[in-house]
Length: 200
Image (cartoon, rainbow, N blue to C red; front, side):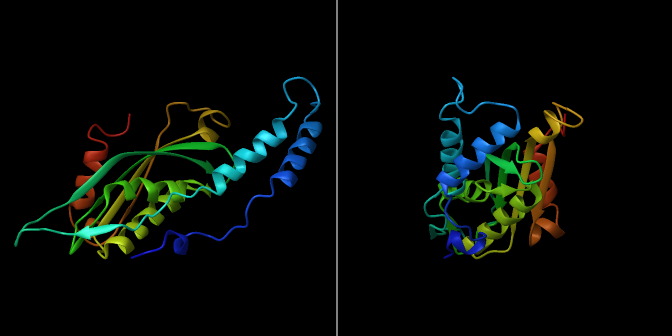
């Protein structure tokens, strides 16, 4: 079994008092008055959100069960509809990700809720989409003890839709394929199931 903490960068707990102080300074530099009606308490609220986001505890991500697979059976498990918000580390703006994970089970299967928890634990940090799908695939492989894992993410990035080119319909798809997902048609099948009509 794997421990979710092993695959994550270590970080100290958020000093909410210091973060609130920095946000008060930021508001002043932006020409705002932190004491005006509407902004009173805003630095503290934002600091509390950072603590909630970065100190998120998803619970156990490694619960597995014995596999009852018939001899000669060829099976693939796909879990889709895993939605998570993360923060782009380049602009500190949100990105919304829809993640699909597939794997070929061996002697044990991963509890279905653990897929969501694995996605969440990697989304609750400053992130890039490519690293997130790779981390999800790695953690599923370690938890299940199999190398045949694929992870696909379809992302909407506010750093692209609300700034810069302002392409509000733009989508980013990234994937990480391991084992038979990278050297057979399984990766293509997973992508087709995730995006049956292609990118719009």
